[in-house]
Amino acid sequence: MAAKTTLEKLFQRRLLFVAGKGGVGKTTTACALALTASHLGKRTLLMELDGAGRAAYLLGVEPGPIGIPRRAGPSLSVMSVEGSAALAEYLEIILPVKRVLQAVFASRIYQYFVAAAPGLKELMTIGKIWYEADRMDESGERRLWDLVIVDAPATGHSLQYLRMPDAAQQTFGGGLVGRESQRLVDLLADPHLTAVNLVTTAEEMPVNETVEMYQQIRDELRLPLGMLFVNRLHRAAFDASVVDQLDRKLRKLQNRRERTIVAEVLNRGREELGWSRINELYLQRLANEVDMPRIEVPFLFAEEFGLREVHTIVTAIAREASAAARVGAAHGRA
Ligand SMILES: Nc1ncnc2c1ncn2[C@@H]1O[C@H](COP(=O)(O)OP(=O)(O)OP(=O)(O)O)[C@@H](O)[C@H]1O
Ligand SMILES: [Mg+2]
Image (tube, rainbow, N blue to C red):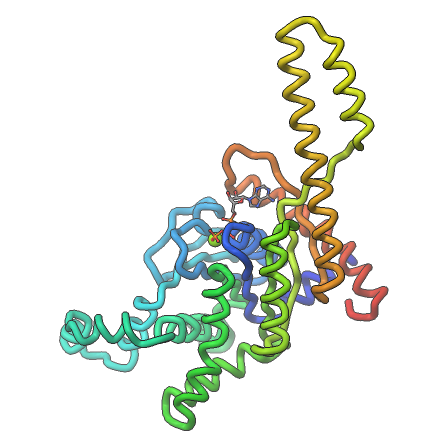
């Protein structure tokens, strides 16, 4: 079915990053993608980096302990990841003597080292992601997860994460750390295994940042790109003439209560029209400057975001994905 094509292609990868400017909807989009993948039967792990458990909350479960998967559906789990915890976990694997470890963790030198070593936490976090993406299940015959989706932090910090394995490989060369880093580089750079997806809203600052991030990922980091999600889009279902008409009606109204209500509706109408125009403008800019298949997600009016809203976004993404597949096919890159 066409509706599945673009997303199914994306889900053939093993590792999907969801990155973008702060507050644009990365966690919401990552949750919607994770739900979609699990509905398609993929055993999916959603990893939230440096988050406060929002991903778990949006999927309707309590956040579990850091670094441990928490069940959020028939083939869906969610996990919070944090750099120092990932380092501690790694040290536990290579230094299996509990007493020695406790002494290491308690020492001031260790605390100082973790705080001061540039990029160490980021490197360990990517290591943890790699570990989950490569992890075998109890039978030892197949992987534990078909798909790992990473809800990445805001732009600058995401780039630091994505840059780290390559930087570490160049710094440490052929030694142990260099070799481990090379494995991470190989995973991140393989377009069959990994895709970096971007989320943005169609407004000036987020779009500027998205265009910059897109260029850096393509030209400097040279990592495979996935899809661009344009979130919180306003599409007014009326034009300026309707607003003008209402404005004329308002002028004629005598009753104060009626005037208040109509004035409020008029304000909302103007606002919606204003946002629709801004969104239209920046969608055009994205189309011109970011060569990635695009999925448009509508603005949802909700007092509080929860699982129900994420489900609405899942439906919107599925509908859009079929349109994106048609556009992609027309350009020969579905
Ligand atoms: N389609 C949408 N319509 C309306 N509101 C939305 C939509 N998507 C997300 N939001 C709201 O936007 C806010 C930011 O969403 P979210 O937490 O997913 O962003 P984020 O990029 O992960 O933020 P951060 O950078 O802080 O991690 C939330 O309040 C969320 O409820
Ligand atoms: Mg978030």
